[in-house]
Image (cartoon, rainbow, N blue to C red; front, side):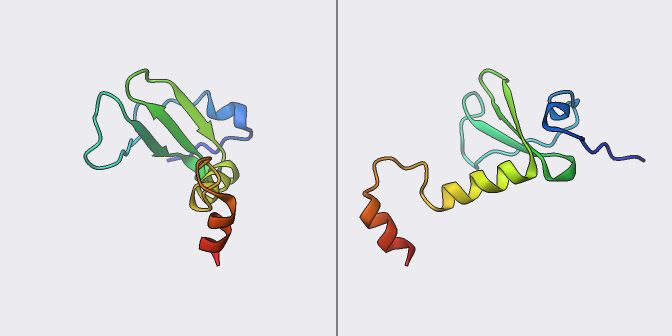
Length: 88
């Protein structure tokens, strides 16, 4: 069996996701949640269950996103000084 490895980000959008294993947070509402699927070469697909729309991330993009979440980059209500103190 040959594993397809996308040559470029644009190639991710051509993948057939029918066999993808979608994961979501336990207890989340199946009709309205974000779902994640790991793809070839470390790429990741993210979809919204209500709309079915899918975003694709290369391995590097997904790692940057996860690290940003861990660092609080997407928490605009957090006081920056408090955030910096928590990181120490």
